[in-house]
Length: 278
Image (cartoon, rainbow, N blue to C red):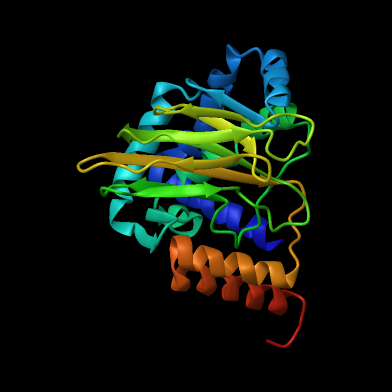
């Protein structure tokens, strides 16, 4: 059995313990099914393509699924790892490793077969889950202090293939805006600016290497929490890119202990399975 398969079994075991058999039997997938029921996927696919691999839906998740994410985000507040990079970002993050341990419903939603199938229709790519040692596979991002923000950037893929980002609104008692620029990597089209303030239950989908974006600063007393899912077309990553990715995640998001402890566990676990000396 692969490491990722073992992890999925462990996550589902936690789901059963935390939410009972109903959660284990596909509550998240059923919620996604309801979300997709009223969508015109052919029209949305055209919109996604015309916007250079970008799609925004102000309403996506059903109310019950959105509430479960709000409850999870509130419960995980004590686990937030805060970071500050002068001139670029300030805020807090909770990685998939902590989510797996404490709020496995999010992992269930991330793995929803209905969601993945719909994302494949939108992107035109065969999508895979991010590897089990990737802390960004699904993560929560918290803006809870005045000045929390992130500057202009791309969600650069360090994988051999493409990486797609799904943003889900969770809590938005804030004035923060997601600013973005379409077509910045297309020499045949002019850059096209846009902005959304996505509410709880909203969805944003884009190719991480194509969308230049930022989130404007929060004000005193405001709270904003968003959830990201990352899917890849090729889960392989070259060693030097892995090091760069881990350093970025440790410094800018989740902390060295969280990132490198999990990376070391994954490496040594894989070595033991193949009979290599650790």
